[in-house]
Image (cartoon, rainbow, N blue to C red; front, side, top):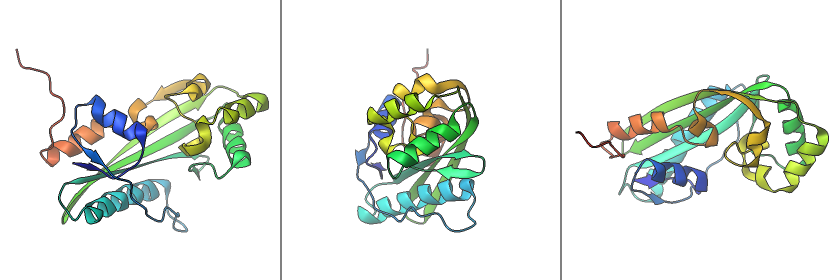
Length: 192
């Protein structure tokens, strides 16, 4: 299988469930279409990444694409453009509950399948000094919503309801289900 992503977090998660894969980054336009809902956006991104991966490697392997976005007050938070964008995101997430949408798709020729994970995450209140200090660690720079739950950003998370791995970037329950549809093996416990 091909992972159509350069994300080290997604590759770690696939290895965690015993999937054999190769990895290749894909370049697509990640602009949101005016009026597009967050669910439609993240789903379209995952499907386009899977299709681009399939096309780029000339269809030798099934291609998996994924996308994760943070939604707060109906506003989509992608990766921060710069320091001020990250500080604005973190201050809006402070003391609030937001949604993390993570879509995963597999493309194999004319076959395209998609699964979606929705997770609620509540942050404790964060001071402006904490936001700035967190930015200076470098961690928020390439993360949707300007935080990484698997890293230092975990200190802001007061409650999570849903898929932890989906917040990291690849919902493993939905991914394993999709892989099964395409007969791609994942780790299975031994029968006794």
